Length: 172
Length: 236
Image 1: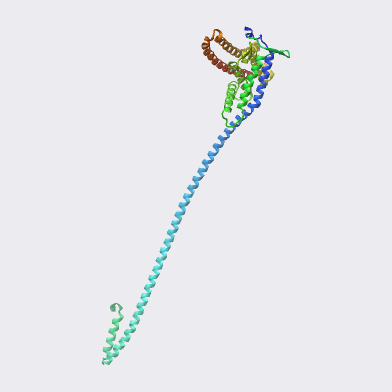
Image 2: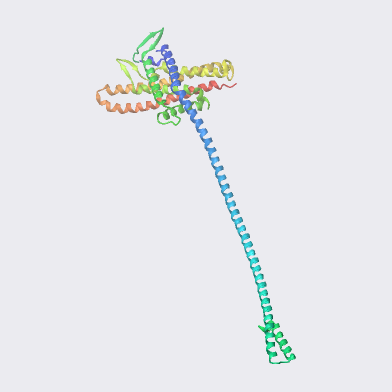
């Protein structure tokens, strides 16, 4: 019963050979069917994960850069818009000023012309009045002559008339 | 021990029981691995995860003993060795085929010849790895360390490594099967009334044997890789 406990008891070299060959054969087919593909897959996975981490980092940086660019562009367009508005305001101010000054000049010219015209009118009126007075005096003279007035009286009368008419302020 | 069926071939003695059991273990292991390694995907799921976990486990053993780049070279060896011995240890717990009084299927590692075959293979592999890395001169100089007087001790150490590695597994598994058989005999030895007593006992012992089988497979592979690493790193 205890022969099995003695190592030399069942020393079957055939078994040893059989197990050695069996084990090597098993190792070989495991290598072909499972070990090679699965270690390759694990290797692929680790490289893929490493690549993914790298590319994620890269795209994160790209996104940050892009966002910064956008913000800068927005800031620039703000500045530009402000500049355009202020330019337009300035141009409008200038245009208003020129319009006003033109209008003032025009108004001044018109006023001067009106003054001149009035003066002319007045002078014309005065001249015609003088003529009228002359006619009238001649008429008066002829009437007085008809009434036999002496020459001195007549002259004095005419002079007083002319004097009165010659002062326009008084006549008004 | 119960008689075994043997035959002679080319002057060598073959044990039919060991051959059948060994082939069964190899077939179970290969079938499992084959099924798990179909449809490999970059994003693993289910059975592929399981297989990768198994590989990572044995890779972890040799990483911790040999070095971080060891799995590339020794991964396949440790993987096959561990799972072969694991299944061999556990086979006898759930399959035990006996025709007449001749056992045909049992744990192969419950036979000292098989256990010692594996330990011899491990030691041979360790020496082969040492020679491969350090050359014959560097390898055999290792036996003279620290001084040449240690040569007999070193040689004896090789022998004891070989014996303890094999007999440790054999002893544990053989004892497990022996006790399981004794409990089974007890159940029917004195009428059926002993069955309710023996069944829980057998159940507990089977569970414990599973535990022992796993531990022994782990110990075997760990020690084998330690021997490999010793042969690889002999001081100059």
